[in-house]
Length: 412
Image 1 (cartoon, rainbow, N blue to C red):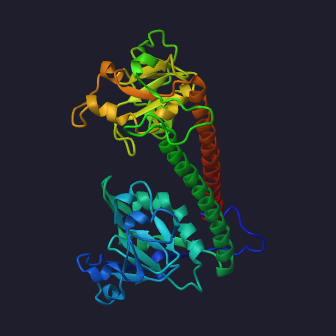
Image 2 (image 1 turned 90 degrees about the horizontal axis):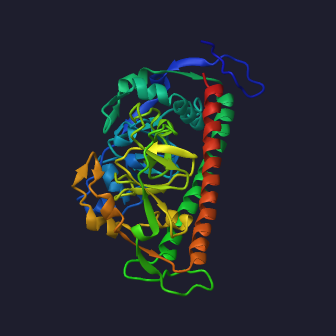
Image 3 (image 1 turned 90 degrees about the vertical axis):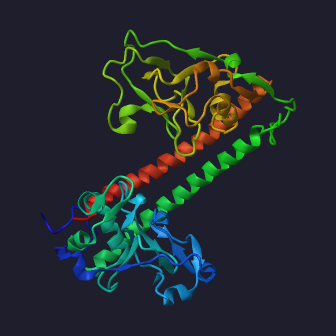
């Protein structure tokens, strides 16, 4: 293996030095403060849990503790700018969390602080280097099951790292720091748009016991009407008997109806999909399996493909007397949950799905504007907002991919 990376800043030609992790870095472990003592809850040091080390920079924590917790060795204090790694936690699954606190923090027993001579190692360079090695660390250093995993610290310390001069480290570190700042900005914008949409969904659809929403478009003041889903939509049961499609779909709460291979990195459907439902673009499907943020399943419309196939365990339907885009957004609210609850018990499951029959699903009541124009206005408003969210999400993913590409080319 060569001791120079593929891509370098101008003016640097020397080979990189190869050293073991333990030659330059020591690990400082934390401990959990005694929560039962109220003195530890109202001080001036942020206590950070392993769950909060998800982004590169940590600026706040679970709660505040006093210096007494540090003096009593109940926990460890770490200075701002000291890299932290999660060494044991459920958040280790498929990733190696590492962060730099922007304030002084106290850490728990699942976290280690990385202490080194900053005159020899640039912090941002070192963090980027570890991020580049994330796959290797997960494969060879992280041990345990899928729920709780732990870093084998002796193995980590024996890892070999490569360092350029401190001057080159600084330039590389600054470069990746700029990329990380850009990622953080895009993420904040994306989070802001998602929060904005959530707020509008709560304001532009009637809440429990109400017949009109809090916010309406000008010219619309009639109460909304109650309708059964079966009165405005028609069940789809067409089979894929002629194999018009061989694209097996899954219903993701976050991504909608999506190709199984793209979502799972493999096909989980049967090889013979002739007995599956054939779903056309614009038709809806109900996934009766709960997921994070979707306790009663998810209803999504097929938008990404002309057609696809779905397991007959799912309920497929198409709108016949309601604006399609309005219906998409209606099922982004939780207004329909109270109706599902009437017919499905969370404990009663069939193949991991809520035990609700198609007949009962179509009995569920929805609140719909009487005016088709109001339905269109609401649907188009949220469609525009969704387009902004998608555009921001794509920008974020592009910068993340750019960072991944540079990590490959700028490190050995």
